[in-house]
Image 1 (cartoon, rainbow, N blue to C red):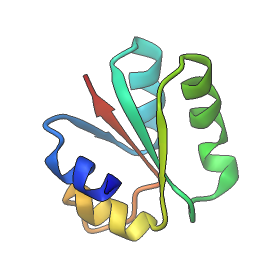
Image 2: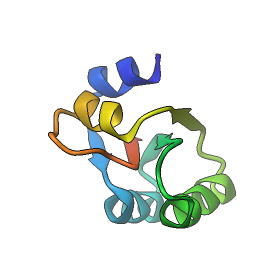
Image 3: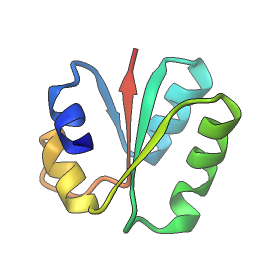
Image 4: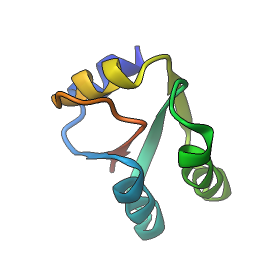
Length: 82
């Protein structure tokens, strides 16, 4: 289900650093985090999203999440932009 949301979203931010920037500007509608991502990498993103009451959805695979975004590498986090 969440892979479909990512595939159908018009505006995405892919990757942890870019996602953090988007969270700080308040443009994120929903956050998608891969369960197989390194916890240390996604911990700050998850914390900021929770503080800002952004819905967080988890998916099972970084590789599948990257593919849903149209990239050839895995993605640990993806922000769906408002």
